[in-house]
Image (cartoon, rainbow, N blue to C red; front, side, top):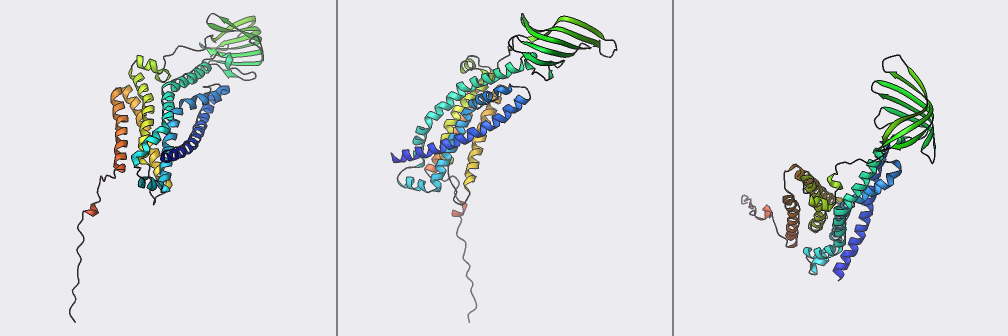
Length: 375
């Protein structure tokens, strides 16, 4: 059918262009954030691109929803602006007739949005969290670069090595400055190597000297050694932490319905339901004022998306705080948005007048006739 094919072609062009622009913007923002975390030592600088890929993948459900909403509003507004809507209306196609072709175009995207929100989002969060944990909890010597002074994770030691001897976890010309328990010590050694004993990691120094004194006193203790060992950390890099709700799978959220888990589940389901409601809202809200600018309606559309998305985020915190139940939030927020969209669409489809113009009910003004004097 010409009606449906023309709409689908228009939507495909608009959706593709909008998606590319939004992905580029989000990738730029995430890249800046990742570079900031790498400079502060939260993630490995070598994993910046991988961290960015996981972050964008996790946010792809929101990006697809916004791209689909903007594409539909842009396509329908362009048809209003170019008077194509008048042609379709005079041919017997009402405004509600646009819903079937829009959903035929959007249903694969809606399925992808639901899969991204329910399954890909927690998986991407798990990957980024594991990358951060592994890098933050690495041993002190793993933080050291040859030729640079590096502070330990506890902040009470400073390491320096001249160069690495590859292949055997050894280093040349080792320097360690330690301050703990009211004492300061400086240890130098010709070479050092790593050894793992049980669950602890030790740095074994060879052919060196150790200077130790008590802070505030002038006494200095000097000792030479052929081999000296110092503990640098645990050999296991990852610790057991309580998992966050955003890291849990869909099955775990359903199996353990705590407030935090229900809030996360409502947020994920909310993204899928919002993408469906926004298709209806796009048809109901798309219009062009010939006397206004082209950007006025788009600003209102973006504001609608931002408000809806913020209510989804607020609903998650409300469930966690116990202010509203899981089912009540889904029914009130998403059911209310659907009823609002259908009601506004019905108003425009049937040309209902909600607020009649008051001037139409006013009586005509009295006409005053001036009677002049007869000549």
